[in-house]
Structure formats: structure tokens, C-alpha cells
Image 1 (cartoon, rainbow, N blue to C red):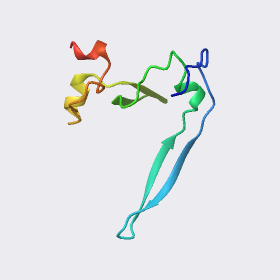
Image 2 (spheres, helix red, strand yellow):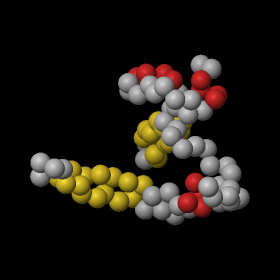
Image 3 (cartoon, rainbow, N blue to C red):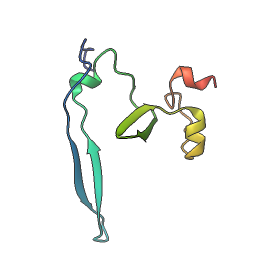
Length: 92
């Protein structure tokens, strides 16, 4: 486990779309947003391993936040692990 790095609150990153080939020969696109390790290991990084995230567009901004129980139910993504959502969302 990496020690927590302090004060890495922003980064310049990349958005890429890779092509994946399925066993039946079909090809599909797989989009990715890279998050630097220095950012994700910062003590202020808001997500833990396995956290379910709610991603949405607001105008031209991409909003990423922990998924509330209502959002998980809406998308049929309820998991039976304690890391599904942050503690502040479990109580709703």
C-alpha cells in the first residue's frame, strides 16, 4: 500500500478511447479517463477502492461523486459489500 501523499488536489490528465476485440471478432470502443496515482493516493481523494460512482454531465462538466442508494437502485447496481457507498449515503 502506498503511503498517502498530501496536497495533490489537481492534475492534467488524458481521455482516451481504446478499441477492444471480442472473442467473436466484434470490436467495441472502451473510453478511459486516467487519474494519476499521486492524485488518487492523496489523503483528500474522496473515493476508496470499490466505491460505486455516479457520473453525470452538467452542461459541459463531468461530475463524479459517490453513488447514493437511490442512484444505485435506479440503475440496478446494488451490491452487498460495505464499500458500496460512503457512510454518509448509507443512512438515507
